[in-house]
Image (cartoon, rainbow, N blue to C red; front, side, top):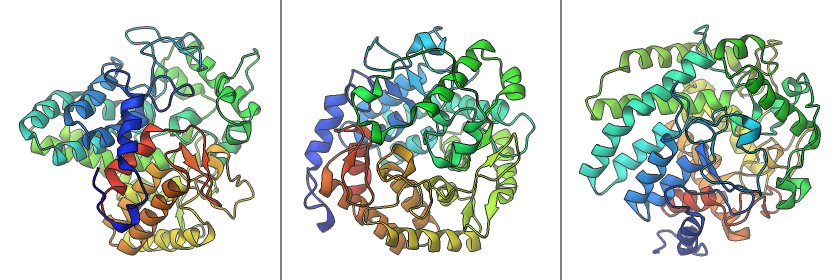
Length: 429
């Protein structure tokens, strides 16, 4: 595969393509063999961008396979269990959802409409892309309606998350305090992730105990949205989800315009407008970013993480707020050797290799760089691009990277890292 800029001369993009093919399971892509043997929603959305550079029809198949598991209420689950696998816990028996394709009972950051917009605009076979778009639009609209209806029933403009796994940033220190209020599960279990990845790179057991309590909580409440909203012990206005949903919503509006699909557009616009106003309640001038909020205590969650600058990606900051966030990112990049660490290195909860408490994730780098570009900061976009290339040069296509030395962490031959290389790093910033 031809390299298109000097930064990338040491990246083997043919290996990135081979990783997607290796992780292909016939219509869906697993994140990596062993550790994650199923289809994860936002992994799959990012991975589709990589497939777009290899095989356009296979990219659209990735989307269609995920949306086959969409619930009747519009939710797209965060995991679809297409086949049995002993290497992962918790499986479908723990989640308790067995109708249709067995799945988890929570969602994940809703990046799908953004992915599909990129796919539509980039596809060479435009007639095929338009056909697929028309088929998918009602499903995308139903998914966005689910977020607003089920996760913001009071119409505050700020959707909430009921589980740290739903954030995609599972053990972020931003969730420490609200998660501490959740009881620990009272039954024993065997984690399978520690058989694949060093325990120093994964969440601690007390966190896992609480994750599983929440899974049980949804099942005990029969997945009833009213009961869960009223009684869930974990309820967070997650700035990452809010930002990704906002960008995806605006992309969805544009896709509806392209396809002359107007059903649901006015309602979607109202929700986006509501969020554009409400977001300012999460702004922290002292932190120079937006902060998530514990909706049970009302407290701001004051950890600075990559999620707190994702409003750049969502187009949610004013010009003054964007300038402050860009200044924060510039200093952040100076403080690490490789990329934007998932938690700011000045935090007393920073851990260089532990999942979302420190490591660099290249799909988040892409989102932040895209936001920086949108707000007119090409130098920051270039810095993030260059340091993302450096991660792959240093270690290859790992799940995440140690920001201090570039070492690969988590799972190797990882699909969304390979996909981001193909989609973003294979072109000049």
